Image (cartoon, rainbow, N blue to C red; front, side, top):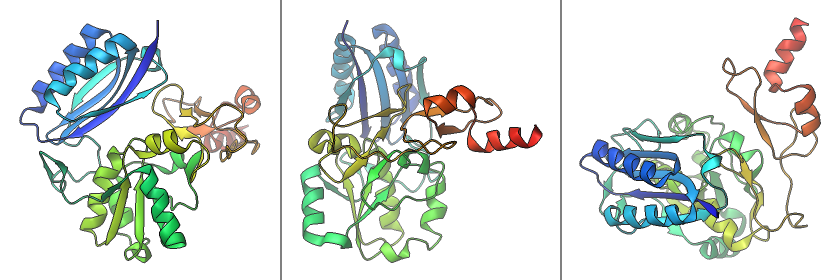
Length: 299
């Protein structure tokens, strides 16, 4: 049976997020889908996987309420998620500023200018080194893939972005064309708005995020490396396996061998770190660098 993963989000005002949560949970349970869905007063954000027929039914029924919502289809299925999680929260992406984001029937108000993948390349062709790519993900995700010469903020969670933007570290970018980017586009819908509110004058975001850019250009564009994903695969690539244009960015924390594979530290639940490791080191030392060093000191 063919299976797929759906990735999607839609910003629109929701009067009763909990009612939408219950409807989405019942819909997914009835169709046998697993994944993660967050609903807030500002919209919905989700990733679900299962049989392709069930995914098509889910998409059709969800479009009845969320008019204009777009779904991205990815390889994978139900087994890539341990369970179904559907939650109602203050924010569909937790930046820690639930009162700042403004949303109307057209989406986010005052965010960055949307660019297609083609327009991103045109901007760089026309403006050259003046263009700054700004990573809207956490620093761990950027270890295995990012846009060429991108600025990668030192953040562990989206909550960290506010203090980063207000720290003064990035004031040099405020008069430059800044292209914010993230996996599927949703984090940059919010991040670009937060940047505009803090004095960044020319802010862009990529329609569909890295996913859509990679689908268009594979490894022949401005993207380098692998894409971190939030299911058991942990990464995916653009282009065919063995593509000579692929750029390897990730390295094992223990031996520095090339790798794009993340693992959960074996010291969990005390340590919740994910770290890059080659297969050999993972077999011999299944701990993140900090835990491995601590264990070595205890020996």
